[in-house]
Length: 250
Image (cartoon, rainbow, N blue to C red):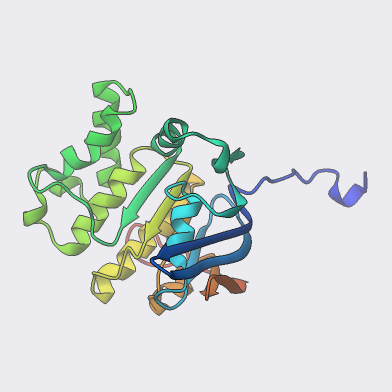
């Protein structure tokens, strides 16, 4: 073995896609959404997939998270080939290993912020005490410890999205997928959300994959993949500043 590489561990990417294709058919119309796309995503980073509406960003996120199957090619997540898992195994994989944050928050109107975060933990087989501990800890981590008893109607848009992030974070997922998490928010709240996602990647070692056409997010990602017409046009690494709990670069 070459001495320069003797001590370097072999890192397996958290997510890998090889030659994936995906098309949607409506009547006689066939639309190619992903066209032979190949990429790998490392753990402990915030990777941003950017590009115009309709370029295939959200479909790529759905495919990488196992929500949709590819027409051809293969997707590996945490070493498992998703195309070889049956429906029940896929559901179990998503429950145990993934978290999701969506544009529309997806909160239940009748539940408090604490109950929103605690709910999925009950389906994971955790004890009641552990579920409550994780829910409280996650809400505190996103700065909502003092708001955890409030319902969505009593929260701002930014606070609702932070509840959604806490709900995903409480599962302690290895993979966190965020689909347009800032598009419904103003600039200040959008900044806060992307800072939180960046911090989660770096402090928890979570693989955070974020889809957005918001150009403000580019400077806060560790890596930016630009998409157009179902393909990766460019792949570049940035030097994103890590934001501390007071909102200042560290």
